[in-house]
Length: 117
Image (cartoon, rainbow, N blue to C red; front, side, top):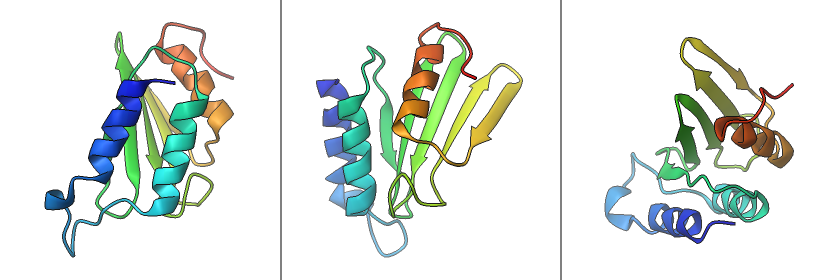
């Protein structure tokens, strides 16, 4: 668990001056799932954490040309709007049903590990 990552999540959740009727603040299910994810994964990588403007959150980890982005939908990680996107050079794809274990595997890859299966 990264204290810095949790601080970044808290900052995204409490940026009231950024939210209005069109750009929505993160909903509780998205915030709770993002916090649970950040507490459960073990990595030295610290994500950028931002609101998506639709009640969800975006987390992005990047290192050595590898990038993983996770969108946590406003209804939570297990809702249809959540996805995980990975990229390395011209190679990229999305996982439309991410779970905590999948995120952990992709973060190992970002840190220099083997490509997840």
